[in-house]
Image: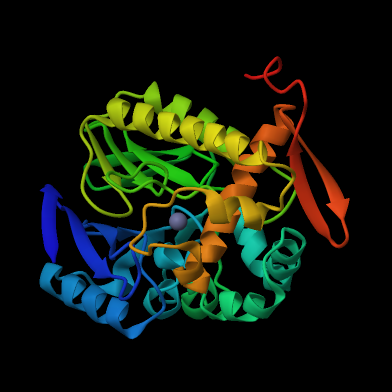
Length: 330
Ligand SMILES: [Zn+2]
């Protein structure tokens, strides 16, 4: 499925079979010298078939094509394993390029999930059903590192990088300066909420995400090109909705913790999730994993705001309300 959004700028819809996201929006910008593809899909046959059909219809030669990857999630970068050629420049961010190179980051995930209460018997299946584990990059690739305000000129388009940490640590968007188009990756999505998860204890992703929303709110944007689902025109309204969503989430967690101290996994099991499953026990293990990561991100934010505290009980981290949390509320 191809849609021309602006002259020489196309959306190619890449299916993500059996995933609630349904599909990824890959954006292809054609130029006589070098083409640019923004985000790719998983390293998987269905994704490759759709991409090849799209590029074939558009007459895009991969040997004359560069890539911009918004963030390290497999649905945005995995297919590079099959698409990149010897001449490709792959634009990416420093933090996540390093992350991909570092060995053993999956085992770090598992340990972190365990101390946050994820059941031992479901840990391995959670890992093996994770799309990043199944459909991520299979081999190292040379990345060209971009940072805030770096520019890419392609045909009549002039893109500027906007760092938007939160959904991931190094998340990078592209702002087109003339037409005021914003390639948002997973920073802003319509009708689904970008997931904010935490799987290591050394940053506060929700705090950074809310700051990134504030930063993008100030830009002058005509059209947001998101990584999934439909285009967004009223991005300011959408940003306000996303901010409200997280504020409601934080209050929901505070009310769950009123029942007593609990692990992140236990908190996640009581939060409300917009899914088709009626009860937590029916969630597939992959959904439990994402839900737990979301709960951890929100717990971290509340802890940094001094509203909750953690302690170690047995081998697990449990969180509880600070008695005076109402006085310190943000
Ligand atoms: Zn993502």
